[in-house]
Image (cartoon, rainbow, N blue to C red; front, top):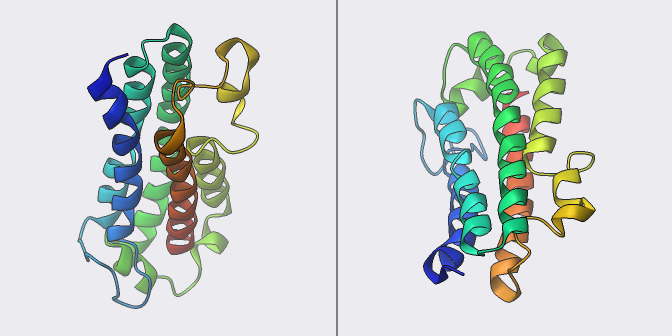
Length: 178
């Protein structure tokens, strides 16, 4: 295995998942960073976690882990497009890219104005974080256990912590948007 890449892969996976929380408004005006382009920041930072998955498959020096990493990346990238399109509908209604601005612009909840956009965002986010029924890429028999097959201990725990952190992040984002 490539020791440096093998060590950095879980860190590259979890760091963007934690960075997303910087622009989430937890209360009126209470966010770590009130960026004017908050939703763009979320889309950009959340796409970086795929690099950690590729590094995990490559750094393991295992062909099954690499094949699994490529399959997971293909799924994640293919579902980022519908997520971005669902976000664009909310941004057009709100007239701002700021997460605080989106919350303040919701006189009527956007889930009532855009039920299809909500459904697309919800299903796309479930695919992004590998939740059922989109977890087949890591659960199939021919690819053993996914891109993290060669990981154990704390590094393995970081990959699972990444998935749960992304689940919480997606929940806060969907609450903010819709």
